[in-house]
Image (cartoon, rainbow over all chains, first blue to last red; front, side, top):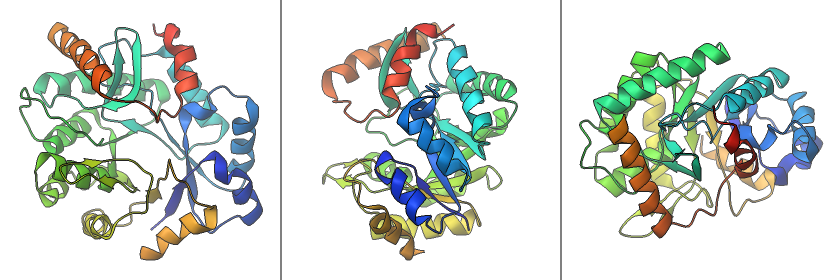
Length: 259
Length: 38
């Protein structure tokens, strides 16, 4: 199983100095789409030593705004520049009517939304000339308009659009707690051949709900769910993400000792 | 489609009143490219 780590500025120099035993790094696409500056310079250096997976937060595949052609152009250029091994984003929308919330907002799980996403994903995949991965997001509300479960929604979109799934196991854990469903049912409902990458991260338990903070170590219960997921989707590459309270590189790499 | 768009706008109004969006990777690029949606 291939192991990857979310690429964060705090670790740039340590990665080049230590060259840890990792199979790839996952870079946040939009942080490098200026094609200049310190971040971009480091990315190109790191890409000489490690494969790079691109993970975006700005595609807004679920929005009703038109797809941003300049964004897609820059994303395609970046993927070519670093010879990206994959391009991913999220099953979400981030804004509408020209306003960007800079957050990954949940979608209503309806047949209309499925058709809406399928059309846009196919447009994106045709433009990028490759299949993309989309990730399940954490959420704190559900919609009375929902016509299906989250996993039925994701499975339907992936099958109809022929895209792949980036399965965030922590997000399944978070949503199972927040919305009261069985995480096993989620794993059972995802098509075996569609999952091409896992994400794991830490979260904050607030008793009545869980917030997907990416600011702490992965808890044992999430590791256990990951091991279950690994049985459903064997040999799927795993990326560990940390976005706040980021420890030194060597300390963060200890997370992989759970494997 | 119109209903979906109205739903999204209503959601933004709700979310902007109750959430703090502190963590926003890629925000600088997205703000610069926002006007470029076509």
